[in-house]
Amino acid sequence: MTDTPQNQLPFAFQLQFSNPVWRLVFEQIDASPGQFVAELRSRESQTLELVSVDLPTGKIRSEQKPHLPFHSSLVGIWNGFALYHRFDNNRLPVPTALGRIDLKTGQSRWEWPRHVLISANAERVWAKRASLTDTAPAPVVAFRLNDGEPIETAENPAAVHNSRLHFPVSYTTSSAWWPVVDRFIKKITSHQAVETIDYLEVGDKLIFSYHYRETNDQLRSYLLITDRLQTIWLHQRLDQETAQPLSESNALPLFGNGFFCVWQNQILFQPTATCITSYYLNSMP
Image (cartoon, rainbow, N blue to C red; front, side):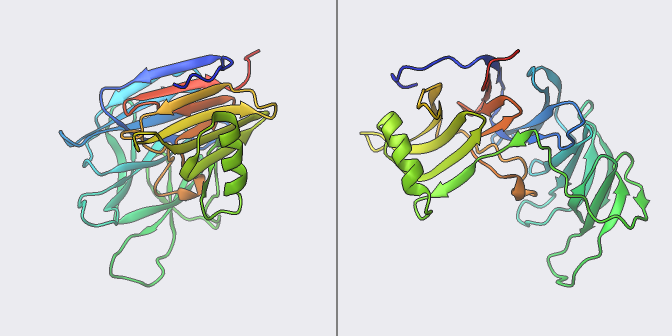
């Protein structure tokens, strides 16, 4: 934390976990209750744990160690149903199966070998066969989300994304916008940002995460929340060595990534490897 005077954002919640948070995966359906799942991974014990959390309260719904290989990963949550890619061989970048997992029990409900996710909605899943050797276009097939049964449909794969969820845009030093955001950060904090700046504008709040090289030449990450009047609401150092980008899904990169994200009126960020903190960006009614 810096010595810069700050106003106080309303506190939402803070969660401490036993293992590092690898990433967060969010509910994709606007009409479904707010939810995210934290993927916890221990490289030492090669264990994967899924912690399901309610939004906006931060209340933990369930904590399970799924019956999946360590490198398997969730690809999203639709209508409360979580889909995953199984990776049985960590040397190959192709999933060995697509399936649905019960977050309450950690058990697989259905699984389709050698398939990868294309998209999903509240009722259906679209996928195609995965192969490292076959370069021909694979046909798209559809399953029921609930039980994985194949279905015939003329409907095109869904393009569903939860409009309540927002990720920052990343700017590198080669971006035309770098001088603008870099100058703003330096004016507010006296820090000279390096490498990458993540930026998101939500309502009257301007949110940045950036890297800064301290006098001992150690690279640090900071989160800055300000507004158009240049009022500092939060300026906090993040644990650069252990914090992971809160990327929603490696399989669905169009949702963006960064060291923070915003769900409705809440910012979520990772101050340390084993912690998720959330503040409200505006006063609650």
